[in-house]
Image (cartoon, rainbow, N blue to C red):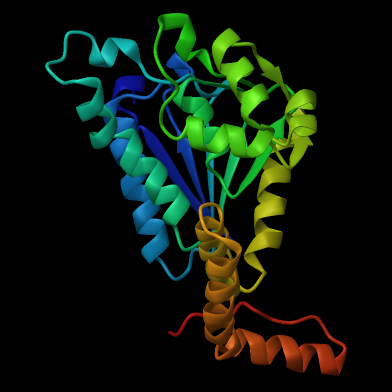
Length: 265
């Protein structure tokens, strides 16, 4: 199968972990419409699949995502606004609204909109050779695909502006220091280490984590009073779920809780 015939998103599921791999390695996984729309569709399918507890997004080859494939939009009769509303914005909204944890496993360069994608995960794991660059100002554009919302919340306004204005490359060690990722993993066993991390996350209480993600997303733009009210509401939903009973029972029995139930035959 030639590269042009290969699917733009590779999907694999193991131990409750759905790994979605951007598959345009000859272009450092630069995004075209097919890739963006397919990734959004795959994420929605994973959300609807009861057997999937964690989603991992990563890239094939040397890159995570080099941003927009400019050749794909050159000469197209579509405004910037229309393009974003058709492709990137639904993707980022899907990731942030997904009812399951999303790990962005940054295996190489994440540039432009690819940087936004790298930042959008609930957990960000980086390979030692990974890097991020808000490259938009190099072509006199504004950071998009959520970068202006995500980046300053991670590093503060001033560092975010500097990274965007100067388009400086952030290497893995600085990314960890700045809070752009949770862990930096060795290149040579990156995929295996990501899988092990994701499988550990997949054993955690899925319903409680879904509610936790909902609460955190809301708290990013809420007042303290609003956050307290939502916590009280969601805590009731968590407390009424079988996971809570299992957690309490396991605690009293001094055993590890079992939050993964077999799927019905």
